[in-house]
Image (cartoon, rainbow, N blue to C red; front, side):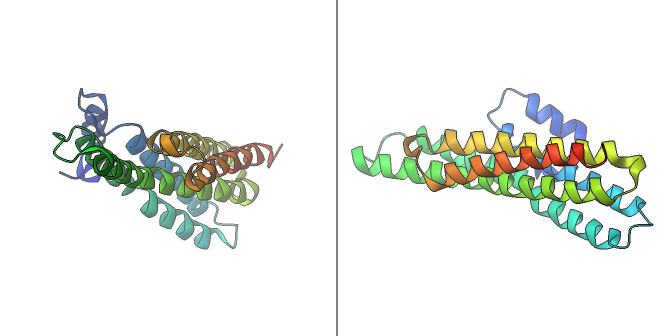
Length: 192
């Protein structure tokens, strides 16, 4: 059964179970989707804000972009682990190349999570500035959740690409996490 088809309790049980996946990447994807959902809720509640419907649609799009990454992350990481456990029928450089490719593919979902989370954090700034003031704290929380998810995903990109610390994807993920953290602080300061 796909992760998104499970109940929240089942998903939490899956994360807590002794198995290898779902893990941190799946959790970061779900946190990103939850943060986007919060922004959609705030925008829908902010009826006096002329752009609220468009912002709600944008938040829903981000939610739809982030949520499936929970499954993608689990599948790609599981594939990388299987490649590492391969019985060794491939020798030397060929095995190293296959293993490197598997981990490079496993780094792609976390990079996509970091991108989505940074976009959610940026949207949270707009919502914090313009949304119903009664929900300002929720907009800040959405930004903070997105920033934490971006940072977590960036960590996973770096872990999966350890042999390539200078890889552009590692640097991009780090920049996205930094941008998301700045956006969270902007959201927090928006109505102070």
